[in-house]
Length: 91
Image 1 (cartoon, rainbow, N blue to C red):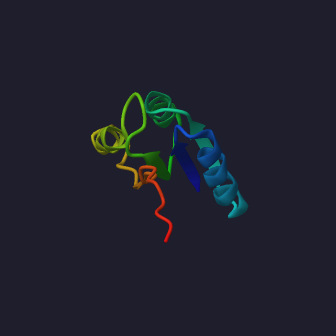
Image 2: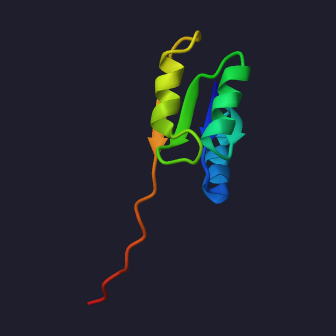
Image 3: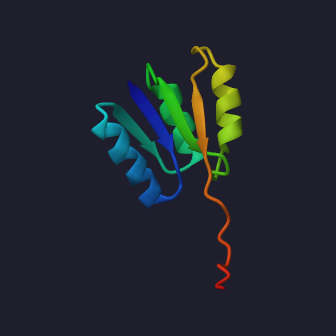
């Protein structure tokens, strides 16, 4: 299976890649939505897209909508998003 990972956080992108490749799948990596969309359009077969919902360039929602309307068959898309950083309250 070929998985496109579009994630702006380099550490998180590498973590996803390691987990997916350890399961025997191929990964394509993109640093932002524009790079992700270009990879999606130029790669003959992408089985799954993992994208940050709020990625710079073209956000995850727009990429998913674009893949649904492209000449390719719509591709399953999974969204990731880190929760905002909050202060911990100690008791």
